[in-house]
Figure 1 (cartoon, helix red, strand yellow):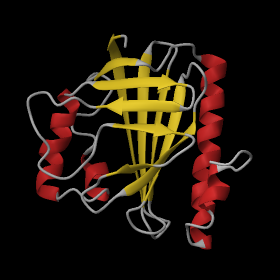
Figure 2 (cartoon, rainbow, N blue to C red; figure 1 turned 180 degrees about the vertical axis):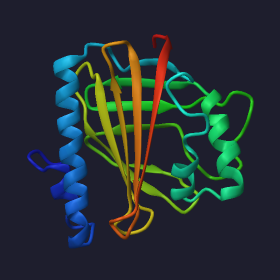
Figure 3 (tube, helix red, strand yellow; figure 1 turned 90 degrees about the horizontal axis):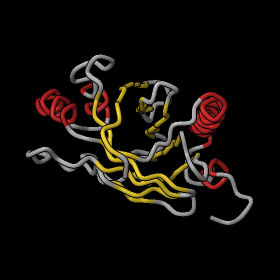
Length: 198
């Protein structure tokens, strides 16, 4: 990405004009959330995390998976399987790697869960309905919060993934799917606890 170009400016030519307001608002919210975390937290994102079942609903990912194109018949069992998986984050500078190692099971649909995201180039991510173009929106040298935005598969459709550490040492994940109509939104929040450093 050329110096001086913001992520929203770069994408203005890729999205219909009436969709840019949604993207700009999502980017603005990401920056505000990251700034708040830097003021109040000091726990690093990098590490291996497991779902805190006392603070997260069992199978909470189901509506998000359906919104992203997973068949309803698979979405419930798939969401519960994801609950048992570890989440591995490796964040440094302008890149973050997110991995979800399978715990003895395999995905029944085409859904990419492991990828490295960068502020300087797009990452193509596979979904049941087609590829998304993903980029890292916010991060810092020793990040406590990152935001990833994934455009597509349909024009005007996008997903944001927000990861932030809290003062109590937990990791909060917020996944948001915004449909191509610009109005329909699914938001899922989950809380993780650290089990290892990476």
